[in-house]
Amino acid sequence: MTPEATLAKVTQCKAVEETAKATAKKKMLDGGIRRISVIGPQGIGRGQLAEDMSKSYGLPHLTVAEILHHERVSPGSNLAGKLTYFLDHGRTVPEKMKAELVAKALETHTNGFVLDGYPWTVSEAEAAAQAGITLDRTIVLRATAEFQLARLGSRRVDPVTGRVHDVERHPPSDLDLLERLIPIRHDEEGRVRKRINRFENELESLGAVVGSTLLGGPRSDVAADEQSEASLLEAASAVLEGRVNAEDAMHDIENRFKLAAEEETIERHAVDKAAKAHKLIFLLGAPGSGKAALATRLGKEYGLEHLKIETLLLEEIYRETSLREKLQFFVKRGLPIPVRLMIKLILHAIDRSSAGGWVIDGFPSTKQQWEEMQKHGLLPERVFVIRLCAELQASPQHTAPISLTLTLRERRDRHQRETNPAAHSLCVCGSVGRSATAEIVDSIL
Image (cartoon, rainbow, N blue to C red):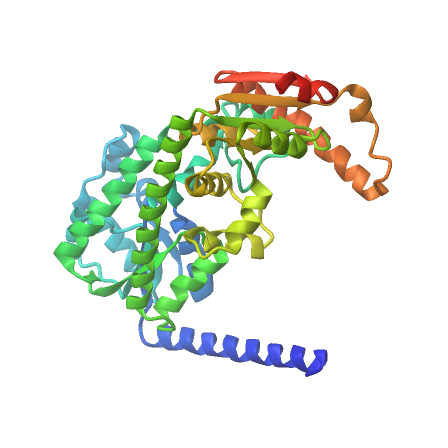
């Protein structure tokens, strides 16, 4: 088949697929599935999904917070005073009052709506039922604790402006701003796990009380792990429109939770193994400083296994492991590999290894990566930072083309900005050795 014929065939298949999706969407809306609720734990992408579904189906996006605020500022509202008291004093709005206000707001949207985050507890569902609220379908977003911790764990707040930044997905380009960002208190692992457990417990209780329906509409669970905003919308839409069997989607979620539990066991074992060995070395340095050669020599001299993120990534992609699918998601889209997945690569490699110790080349190279290593309990016995002398930093490699030379300079500049602060943070544990390239082998060996 010629390239032109192949392209025409692909275009035709895409057109058929889009037509099928449009037909399924129309059938869903014409069939009366217009009163939709989306529930899920904090930080899982629920709000963004509800907004995307609102645009996709032409239905208004409603939140309880907006409904309460609208009632609070509405002229002549009998409940404005009570709402102001509850909200200003940080009190919980009574379930009955909340449900009646939500029911009142939904009455104005006779063509349908996407209700964001309500109801998600047994008490809310009971109050909503008494207020006469009905739903055609509820989408329940589910994700493993690991995914939720990672998603929330990359958030930092600027103490000056109060603005929240995602340092993993959308890091600020201003280095001074990046340096002053601090963790968000309510995103601490202990607090997040409590919220996760509460949601799962409430979901289980909700299922025991109302079964597989919620306020008259079937409940469908959708996996949110590792999904981009576009693919999460597609997954939810496929279930809503009947293009994917809801039972198959639930089976997929159960498999994800099972694999997550297996991964957690592997990682705990790897951390214990590294701690007992007392031979975990971090080797950091600027590009071109000879890290890889030194790591190889250290390995031969002391019986250590040389671990490098790039090599581990390629090896894992060709293995039939639970990490493969997660890694391919980012690799196929040209997205950077999240820090937590890099650490998983290291932990899984340590778990498989028969060596008596490990030397990790070029990682952690940023302060954030080091913080994540600490969270996982991977603490080094010794850290070596190879520093290039001024002449080597200033002179490019003579044999490198101009474009590669510029890239090398940029990488060295990045090393100065990011790895040096990380090395400073590493000084709090282990022994940190610093050497010039010419002296590094003799000073270490």
